[in-house]
Image 1: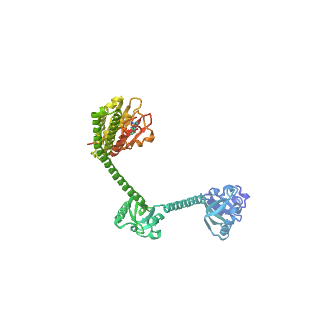
Image 2 (image 1 turned 90 degrees about the vertical axis):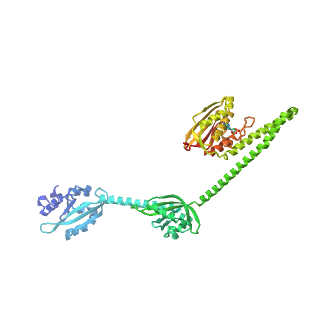
Image 3 (image 1 turned 45 degrees about the vertical axis):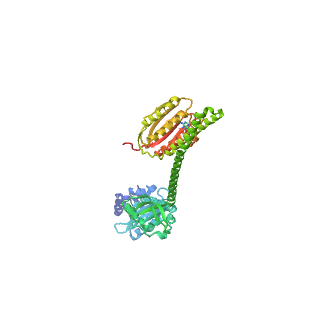
Length: 516
Ligand code: ADP
């Protein structure tokens, strides 16, 4: 730098005060600059260069008003105060618009001006220490903006939550630790009949029938331990004194420090549900009573029908035996029909009797080994198994808790059907059991004629058959008995089948503890 070209002249000619000031400036790592003489010639240290930006290096030795032309209107009064009156100045985090990079930019600075006097005590220059705050200010602005945004989102969330609470069908209210209602939504007004103005500030006991006050104490104790009370069904009172069946959920409310300061209550009006439950209970009681009556009727009727049936049968038999040869062809044929009809009637009555007895037998459930039961069933069916040339596979079966005779009846009916409803091939039947979700599921599969899906329900109804008596014998009661027995054992019966592809009948029996 050739200082002789500047109003300061060659360095050798500089007054001692200027040299001291320059040395002070150059030796500092704080950004400092010095303006000297009437032209305010600019001298600065390295730390000041970032503030100058593109103005460095031409700014060295130039007059300050030219270097800082865009901000001079701001600086000038302060410079004048220093230069003419010897006053120091102080600016803190002051906003200035600088063009150090060739375009206008916001900047923030903290700076001080102090006068520098020469040997004679006259003010000759101005020393400035300046630090830039721009980065910090921008970071703070960002942080403030984020905070404001967060606040706005929080407020929006709260407003949304408030709207949800307000539009809820349930009563949502809160109370303080000492049991005073502090908030009250529209649902609460609808259910209890008090407006928010009437309820807020009142004790929560307002809503609790006197005989249930102890509940509040218990709830309070749970809350104090920080626990929630979930779907607690109880009774509350409305403004008009009406008792309301409600389901309560009570949760503690904590402050920012985690201390419990109150509780929120969600109250659902379950009066309608309770009423429906009561109606259902009385209907099902009514139904089971009429079922019992019906069973009793069927039992009595079928039992009493047996007697006259036997009379008809024995006299028809006598007639054939004693007077058969005297009867003409047609009369004999008619008598044949009478006997057949009577036999069928007897079969129907017997089945009806068996059906009506399923529940009345009342044998206590005991350990029943299904392998033994099955062996007996196979023995009973031996003749038809041989006649049909059937192949029967029986897997290992479990021991269950039940009525062995009745379970035998189920197996026998299912196996009997599998033999009866056979296809062209000799019957292949498999009996198996599988444990599934706490149940034993038994299955009897065959390769018989199969059943169309539309009849899956119908065949379990008493006297419902899919064939004429000429095609396949039977009364249509076997599966109805099976269903009744299985249900008595707490299980279910169903089937899978396709016409021409065989059927599998399943029934379940709960796997209760069978250890003696
Ligand atoms: P029944 O055997 O006396 O007719 P069920 O109640 O045992 O009476 O059966 C009702 C109807 O279900 C039968 O008439 C028959 O049409 C059908 N069915 C039952 N088991 C089978 C089977 N294994 N294969 C095909 N059809 C069956």
